[in-house]
Length: 312
Image (cartoon, rainbow, N blue to C red; front, side):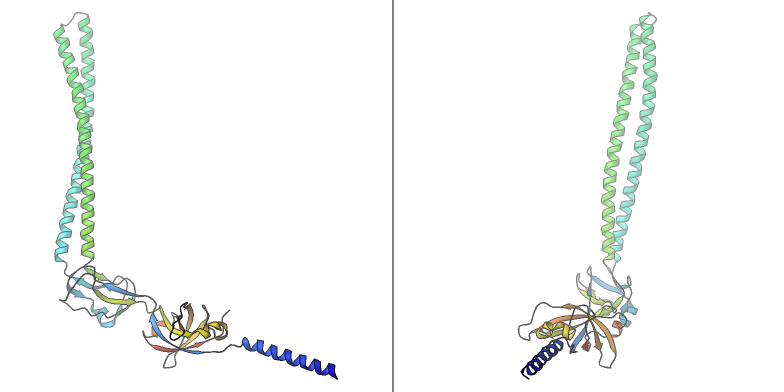
């Protein structure tokens, strides 16, 4: 009888412990409240000062833009004149390089000509020297032949020096052309700075330029974000993160986002903060929205979040 009671007690204790263990692994869905935000919101600023001369009416009325679209143009008359002046200067310097290269070609041709003349004079001098040794010509004739040989040598040296000067002039012309090209690029950048373009396809926020308004460099023109890249920001309590597996708050885990009209969208936990707010004892959490339904969600829209069992 005692042994039967003992076995019954052990069975009850085991069942109790097993139930407690199973209870710890039971998933409990929790409801959270969050706000829709843009994952990457980029500010568009004016790169130069000036007065607005043109505005994209399509972007102004729809708030939607495509990559490369000109959103705002500033007065560019002075910049165009500076660019054309730099362009003309660069063309002039390019012609100077061409002339310097032609001068080198001419100098090389002169060297070849005087070298040929030098060889002729040297042969004539040699004949005169032989004739002088044979007594056929006098010393004056030999002196004249030696003078011609010396003049031919000097002519070759001067022609070679002309090549060196021409090459130096070409080097200077090329340096000047490089400086002129850089100046032209700088003027092109100044011209481009007067045009505000959309960096990518997206939605514009606070885009309200007016023709004739004058703006300063660095002033914010608008903000732009990709409608396909949105997330939901919410906060969870520390005790919920401690039992993260039981409530589904795990990075990479899917959740259900519910709008006020009942529409749903799938989201995924991508960030669970590591800092706790001292007053509220909660942690910031980010949920990325599925690109298939993200465009329909409004920025700053309040949504409900229902956690789901871990995907793993």
